[in-house]
Amino acid sequence: MSQIEIAGLGKSFGGTTVLTDLTLTVPAGSRTVVVGASGSGKTTLLRLLGGFETPDAGSIRIGGRIVAEPGALVPAHERAVGYVSQDGSLFPHLSVGANVGFGLSGRPGEKSVAELLEMVSLDAGLATRRPDQLSGGQQQRVALARALARKPLVMLLDEPFSSLDAGLRAATRDAVAALLEAEGVTTVLVTHDQAEALSFAHQLAVIRDGRLAQVGTPRELYARPADVRTALFLGDAILLPGVISGRAAEASAECALGRVPIGNSHPEGAANVMLRPEQLTVEVDEPRGTGRVESVGFFGAAVVLGIRLNPGSSSESVVRVPHRSLDNPAVGSRVSITVSGTAMAFPTA
Image (cartoon, rainbow, N blue to C red; front, side):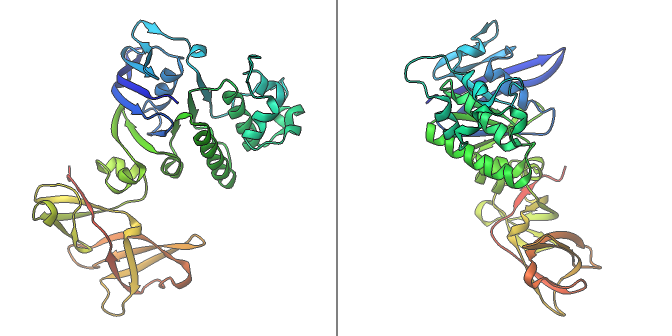
């Protein structure tokens, strides 16, 4: 297993800065997911790790060995790093077996093509097929088998599941995660998919404009985002204007949902109050409810209620709240909303 250490990494292309002073440690055998908007620098970071680009500043160590720094670059094929791209990049003119075998060198102790296919839950009988005779999920597994053939210390995944349909995507992602963990491979995945990032990662790193905005466990970042942009990027969020009073553990915010305890440090005064929709529980409360249902969106197991809070008052706001679809309130119903847990408070500017 191999730890990755990135220190002060910087990279520019044609005068455009893509990464700035990026520092990140990926523990050996763990899975780190890097998320960010298009153009934030995610793929550039992956290419630097893979040895396809040279940094302008900073360094990269894999297993304690410097593999990249300004003016010095260990070639990609000497890094013991596997790379799987979005489209898999299989050789279309080679069979599945030849694609997987391309990564084998004939050294004693190497796994056979059949064993590698079995590792990624593919039947050895597929070895004679061409890539275009496979499904998208099968192609991605073949690409993974080819990358694993070289026994990499590190696996780099560049949005490898994005072209798959929802059900296949989740199944393939779970299978790949289990395989990499069983093999003890240190993994870095780049994605823009929130659910994928939260479910796949041991460590989550949010990159914005070439800098790290926040790093931590998925649960930490989802529950306690560093700022509003990070909160919105990682999932649905309810933002309400509020006024903070009290200090430290006694702080709370007065907002359209009433008085809500605050879970982070924020000065007294005006603030944006952030809650996750699942923190809200809705109950029909005729005629005393302070909210009125204005819309009901059906999504199978759940509905999303559009609720106008305190209609006609100075604190009037509209929120969208998930709710069980078996007993959803009708449009026009008066409802009461209960808040669980704490909110996060962020500056209004």
